[in-house]
Amino acid sequence: MKHKKGYIITLVIIFTVLAAGCLSSNSSDELSVSLSADKDTYSFGEFMLLQVTIQTPDKMENVTVNGDGLVSSKGPQLRMGPRTVDLLPGTNIVNFTERVPSCSPCTKLDEGSYNITASVSYKKEVIAEVSCTVTLTA
Image (cartoon, rainbow, N blue to C red; front, side, top):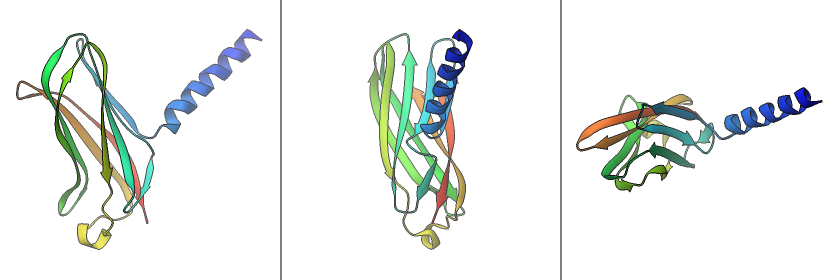
């Protein structure tokens, strides 16, 4: 019975992570950064919530978080930030609400999978970069 209960708990945890949308992470000895979206699939013109989670053991001031994605032949069609934040020891969350462009012919975005990348910079140096993939549908 204990094995069945453990198996069910493991499945619930896996489902929760998968249901949360795309998730990517990057970590080192001192810093851990992840990027997640509230969903895996978006329609043109829809808003997406992107969350950059930064875990650090130390206080860090004037950290810049930015990113881009949905790259077409016209370049990135989604831009996040830049946003300057002060990080406290522990978990820090930086949210971005961005709109998927509504005009596919104008932006040269087709239906399909696209990467979104976020970077974290400290003292003018990129210290972490993460990305995730989302899908656009009509």
